[in-house]
Image 1 (cartoon, rainbow, N blue to C red):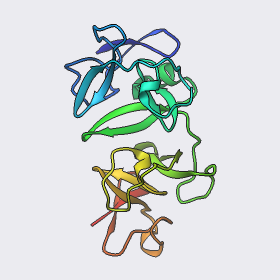
Image 2: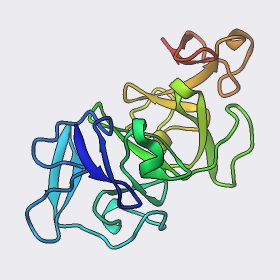
Image 3: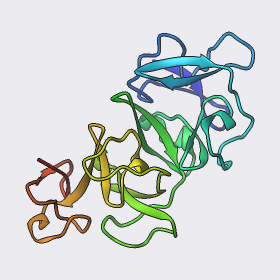
Image 4: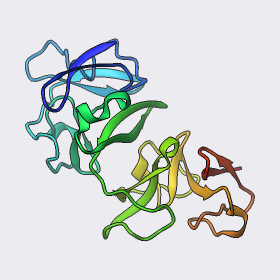
Length: 209
């Protein structure tokens, strides 16, 4: 079990922040030896880099290197890496539900985005609704990637895909409604022709061949 510090500075013990191999450095401990180094995800593991930024939690960003050690630039906001079992300690009133896919592994980060209704139209301008945490059936608004991937295309992050899609096994797929997907259009709860809705929660699924 890892002992770290929360966003308030209090010590926190947890280990469910990532599935990456942290043999080079630890994302929560930030135990890089060199001055000015920060531990960041890299490939299927971690590495120390000389890119420590100065921006704190909640500050706007365009790249993780702008944020302080232990923070990632998530949807243009510096957000802490977090443990789902201790979400409040790391994220305060926000939730630990941003699943960042890195080389097939997971890093969890705090979500400061607006929640939304999947297949609805309640996100701010230039943002789209996506199922951010299938287990909790929690959808969130996220800015569209500068180079969005089409349905069936490759992805690493939640917002690599279009509205009402999810990055499933590094491929963009539509989310779907288990109750009535066969009568709905893709993006409205249904699936593209030739695909079926495979359940990932009691009410929602992911379209797949």
